[in-house]
Image: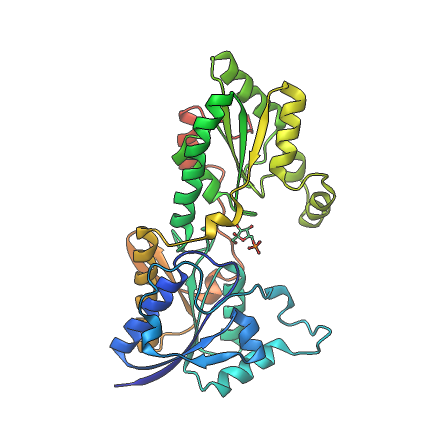
Length: 359
Ligand code: F6P
């Protein structure tokens, strides 16, 4: 039986399903070859600083339903990977050195877009790397879905559902801010699943006048309340026309703690109706993975073990249709899967009377 020594790390924001996926990699590896597993603490930071430990088989049992990550995680931005900062550490060289010190045959990285960019960088530096796509944002290029997304969707949908009764009792406008800075998948799906009346996405800049019109229309129809699902990264038309830097600067100066508060303030000002903001925030990333994510994470993790058995490195696992497949890291790194403005989901929303604030 071939021997493989595997390093595993989880990097970037956590999400439900990370442990299920780690378990999938580990259990399948023990089945497929003579595996030794090294757990790297807190993502790339641990790889840079040399924080790791040999893991025991038993550590991968009983974690299928556990939220978060048993390995810990941290954000170690890709843009700084090649930058020597005040601590004078050459991060890329340290990662390569520690990979060698651990005597790894391969490194498995569970993470989102930033994690995949660094995974690709390390692959180009000659390390054997395999990526696994996690994020509640569902914005990794080349995969129909990422693990973590469906659990967050269930949670966000429950929020939208529950807000309906209190919105109706009080006859209020409720603005629900859903996670997703660049990509609006979570807001779009949760908005449709929860029956939101207005859905505002980063990819579809909105005009306030259309949002107000949509609320007025509902009021004229005798509706007591309006539910707005807004992505944390939603932009108005003016912001939509800005370059990245200008947009960041203008957001930094915004006198509200989020776009949802700005919108709620403007609605109250313009229409004089009681408006409340709900920010479920990190609750969307907390707790046990859904059944869907447990299965997806297991499929992804076990597929990664097969890639390791076959020494098929420089890949990331993906779902295409109903099939688990592998994409080359270099083909997907640095790309983001956004909601296309002609998405069939948006069309479906429009057909049932949802306003996207753009017409
Ligand atoms: O990438 C996942 C995500 O939850 C985004 O939706 C959100 O914008 C961001 O992470 C929040 O990051 P942090 O956990 O660092 O506050």
